[in-house]
Image (tube, rainbow, N blue to C red; front, side, top):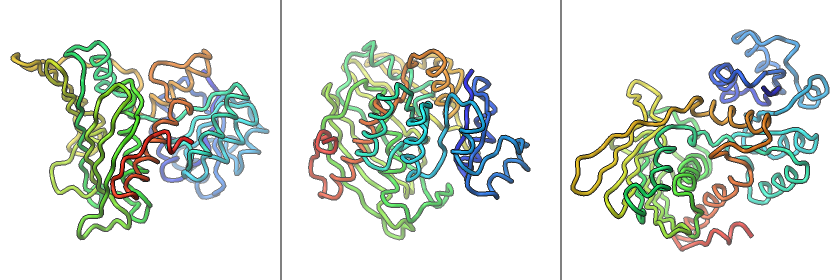
Length: 346
């Protein structure tokens, strides 16, 4: 059990308060913070949050309650100052992805967390689903031998699914692809070495910046990932984690994950296709807390035990996912030129 204060009660923060926090009993909610009186009134009126647990500033909340963990569900540009304040106060923190706006901010937060001996966690919620967990295990066990090529496709039509950020810079790479890049690292259990990326804005797109792109990513273990993604796809949509085909020496592994929204929702799926044999659909592992609830439950466990759970997205680990995003954006600006991951980490 950990005492938790939530900071940020806007659209996404309200969703956390309503849909996620009640499902993680290990998180004892002791405070809610937002500078907007309207946002505080909404959680009080619609969700029954007690007035004495609501604060208009983080300073006021930390002065009034004992807290083990602060959950930051704010806009990206607010992640750094809030996480910095929390860590310097000697309190653990988890923030939404991306946990910082720049690599330098990310490095600064990691250094503060290390110096304070406190947890800096990132809600990379796509890690907490059964299909990618099983896919990572099958690759680690080399169930079909080593994998040298992975194909990942993401297709959604932003205007149809209610994407509300048409003016966002890099709506694909900065906002969506970080989920896919982070899953690549987790599933392959390897770090990216270099990549080439191209992006574009399709005809009649309402996006101000490029919502579609392709990338070729080389990992340190030799695996090449062919990534194709679009917020303006006219074809059949994929699940939010995309559709993955992992070519191995003796067959391939196909899987998809996080398709539990809307009328077309479906469970995670994974198929093992050994060459010359019938496809096999193995049982998926049980995951007690999925999606954002998994991120929060893992952070609470880390606070309670002092040990990082499996697949835990700490700030230090997540730096390489941020670096993949930064390298992809840089490569796209250079018309697809290869970019070494180390270049953006310097």
